[in-house]
Amino acid sequence: MTYQGVLTKMDTEFTIPIQYYLVFENDFLNMNQLLNKNIDIHFVKYQCLNCSLDKQIYRQGFCKSCFFEIPQAADWIMRPELSTAHLDKEDRDLEYEKKVQLQPHIVYLANSSNVKVGVTRKSQVPTRWIDQGAIKAIEIVEVPNRYLAGVTEVALKDYVADKTNWRTMLKNDFVDENLEEWRERLKQYIPEEAAAYFIENKTETNLEFPVNKYPEKPKSLNLTKAQQYSGKLTGIKGQYLIFEDNTVFNIRSNEGLVVNIKIQ
Image (tube, rainbow, N blue to C red):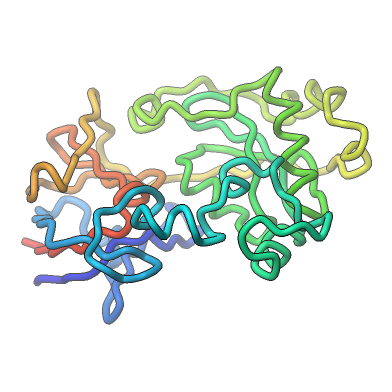
């Protein structure tokens, strides 16, 4: 069977193991059902997730002009501490910024390649952890806006990592850490303005991914350069498709590409 559509982040369902869905405009694929099957992926064209034009993707699924104009790609997306909606101050679109920034946010610890600190909207738990390929995660604080989450993350970054090593994550090479103990050690470094929001009684959330074989030496597929790829799917972790020959394809970083997918 053949499918065609623009790539967007895979939808997920928090089950054991996690279920993955590649959603196109008029169809979708349950990727778990494709494990151990051969998949052909062909690059067709670009389609910016904002303007829908066939323009080269710059970042986050957007063409360059859209990336520097729309609120969905503003700096505070990646750096929550730059949020200003709580001050009634506009960056690109105050209505959008209030909608996203002025809602409960979680600062969390996750273990994917190592223990790291991160920020997500409360409504995105555990989706955010799944997307990062975390094998376990735990909440630290729940704050009422994105700014407070951002300044808390910045403070904790002096004592714990804030990045995931994607190769280590995909190889499933990690040390099994006790995140409850990590949370207690980091408690003293939470900024005063967020200290009252510390969460005392949360336990670790464990995540299991549909992987039959982890890659020994992951090789990232550049589809726009290669134009096409064919391989046997052996696993899915984070937002990566893992193939038998150690090739890995990051769906998230290829948003905005129109592809043709053939299942053999």
